[in-house]
Image (tube, rainbow, N blue to C red; front, side, top):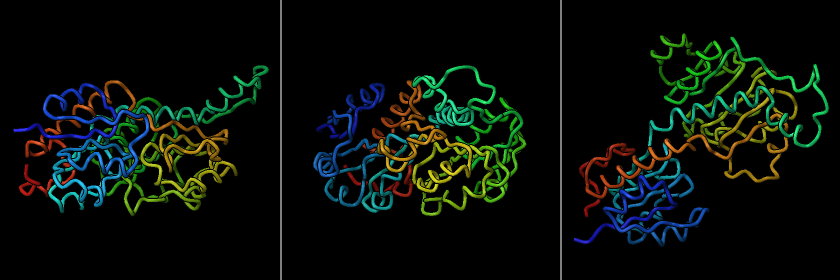
Length: 331
């Protein structure tokens, strides 16, 4: 029996890629940039499996061009790039890589919060460009952290890990929004579940960890930033489209809020001429929350496990659409 064919839309860590290559005929896209949509469709056409990234749109058109595709293994926790109902309708399994990104992403959320609160981006630029001329009693004053209030928008695994770091490390009071109460966070952290407007009004720091869906798209706009404290720091490590970036830029420019730290933007990459890059009170990282050796290796392992299970016709260890069980596209 011939080996299954797999297209990998970008090179992933060898710990996962080698496992895939041992079981399948693998075509790896070699470029730093993702394959254009037409090229992706062409390369997947004769494949049994696809390793996709958030930059790869897996839609009905691609699926129809790949009649023998059985599994899409997304190298990410999120899967907004995949039309999951279209996959399910065609008996195509979809997998993702949850859980292993939690600590690395929480670390970046805290890093951005600290950098924005203490104006580190502005300080570093001023030092590098010669505007640091002496020790100044009123120079580069930032926000204190000890005993302040942290608002977590979306108290899932990453939101809870972020809250845990800031509660135990800086004694922060924790407010949160979630679809249901989080008993563990309330017991361990003394967290209080509140409505969205209360969280905005009472938090000194707002950290976003919500999923991107039709109800959260542009969750943060001009009205939401006006409800926040003028000393508030806003952090987003979730998804760029949760935020109206023009409204955020206006809030930062006008002093509606104090500062922001972003690991995600809309679009990605954000054009260098975008106003947010030129605001001294905005710190932007290039979507690096999961960028540690251990985390990316763990993602690659999960990605390979999902892909290989789908190729065998077995249940995926991390299955986005388990409703397709029993009606997977045959080998």
